[in-house]
Image (cartoon, rainbow, N blue to C red):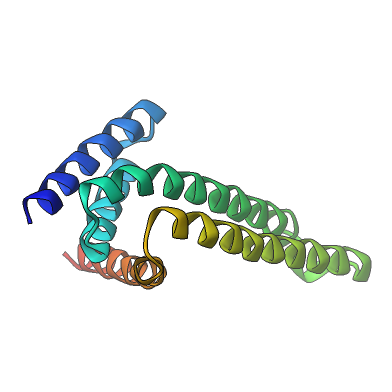
Length: 148
């Protein structure tokens, strides 16, 4: 139990320091710190697991974010003129979107292998479930804040 608590505190401090170095603003920093705590707790990471897991997870998150930004750029380029897209532009947007979705699947495959190098398979499954739960919890908290 002491190892789990130490690992959680160590991980929160380490990741908080890393995000502070990246220059992210306070809201993003709070979300990231919440995510680290949430995933660490859900996965029940030991100090050793956390030390190996977080660098891999951060690379995974960065790659997914780049992919999402690509999707956002494709949609943004076409969103303004969505009702006036030519058939050729619509076809290109579909092909580009499909390619990015495929890339996302490839990232998931690659990092599933990487995660299994640092965590048992059961915790890798828990990770993907916990990410979904985190998104739901974050949306719930945002809704609650807006109501106040």
